[in-house]
Length: 394
Image (cartoon, rainbow, N blue to C red; front, side, top):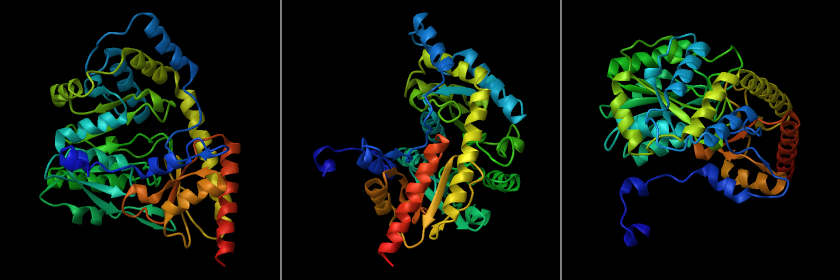
């Protein structure tokens, strides 16, 4: 065993492997395969964003910079949040990070460690668990339930999961992978629990504009006060097609500024200036691009749901937010095996529900932020393969 030959910290050894990457690696570079397994679209970063980065490099902006982010980007992010949420946000609350994952890691480092627990409603993005457990904290999974109305979180289940060791609630809404989106009343109840028990909330609202029932999803911003212990983790990846840029930010009370700057210093020493200039361009020029992405995702969602609902054996409901269809197939209890089967026999790369924690068994995740014809083809391939499997077992 590796621990016998190379003694390592238990937190490092306990870092969970990604069930998404496992299937990704299995199907990588298969001719004709449609890769719908990861959380990104098929559009490259827009030219105006790339041009801003190129200009920065040409201007010689290749030196160390502000740990919290260059002031123009922090101002741009604050203005963007103020404009899109309707609530004023000051630049002093914004700390630029190397992606949303980096923001999550810093948030976790501040509030949870060895012996602590953080509640995570599941199925959930597996990186929540990863960030917690490499920090020594334990993940307390609270499974959601799937029914005719889609995925639902029972607030009483969350309340029952709170123990003296609980330090935070990790709330992703709209959610990856389920598309579950908390109502304002549900957010109010979760915030009340956090206040009652003195807990932090790690709020992942990165899919807030990918909401199909209103211009944006309900947010903790609609309810919070300055005294509330809420850390918002955010990314440039989804809205502006910048997954490979590794750009994000953490929003936190200004009183935590020095702690956050210290953690950035000892983890990344700051984000490259050229990438930050690209971030400014994304925010200042990207509204039309984001609107196009959301419109495409809505149309694709509707087509998928309509097509697959007509095929016997599928368990699904229209996700109100995000850009994933998290669906089940009757009789397919091992969706990890089904994911491999779809690679081999349908040329489709989907993520198995087992990668997303409790409640994910029996489901698969399909990312539908793609060109419309590609999503239609994926729906046809998926329906055909499920019919073939049903006939073989009839």
